[in-house]
Image (cartoon, rainbow, N blue to C red):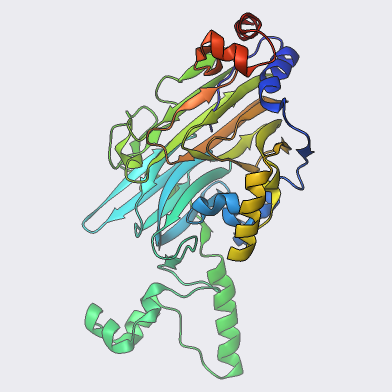
Length: 431
């Protein structure tokens, strides 16, 4: 997310700030036609039982071809009830995991070791592709909500998880090996391996099919299962706390709110961790930010020079306005001939358009590089953002006192650029 948190007289700030952006706008788009908003209903449920769920947001480039560079980025949401565990699995994707709410124990397995961490709201960690992890909701009352930004390493946009314990939809990864390989690997008879690690062979009798069906129904619940307090105490042993950690570690979690906010006043706070501040984010070239906006306050109009920012509404409600080109509401990807024709149209028609949407918890919106955006909070609003192409990104504001690029324009050029005089523009900016 890219913004600041400022509020004077909110209606005045909104009118003046947006005036610079929308002076050439001739139309606006509602939520339905807005390709930059992904309502929470656009998450697909991958797994759900009485203990929690796993959901995956639709591909970004399915909404608009402007998101072609996001085709290898996906958002996953995990949610679980108190005293439950997401059982061990590994995935062919790099993850940036962020705790949105609740308390967790995250265990990361290594070939000859393991690390366990007590995580709380705002805690963040990179999990390299292929890492086996399991996640416990250690809280007695509150649900655990976790958001993952996934970057697959095999096929763009395609995530494949491999489970150690099979379920109705997917077998254990061990069951894919032949009997001879398993017997040689574990130096044990296959029947013993099957009994301990694998689901039973499918039998043709009605009786055995009935047992298999019951087993599958039971195994479907084995992705998210209940754990006892005693088990949680055992899993908590030697777990490290990350909430007070610095952001310099290459393997341990860091908290988005552990450092000073880059923008702060009584109307909100803006925290951001960049690749320069944290080595975990360097090879992925991603920044992560966490924004709190008080009710009635405004994140002033601004844009990012290089970063494409994926923003999730964690809590609260509000509105956002984004300025783009008229044709950016086109859905999906076109064939090459259509693209060439549309490119010719773009060269002759450059119509600025305002895209607006209501924001509610669970919604996601995307801010492409160079696209000005402003956000208003109708209640206390909490946002989590992932910035793709973070290196050398510059955040430029179009209103406010700090980082305002318009104020840097020389007076003769202001006279030539705006309808008002340079003195009038300066006076307006000082407001």
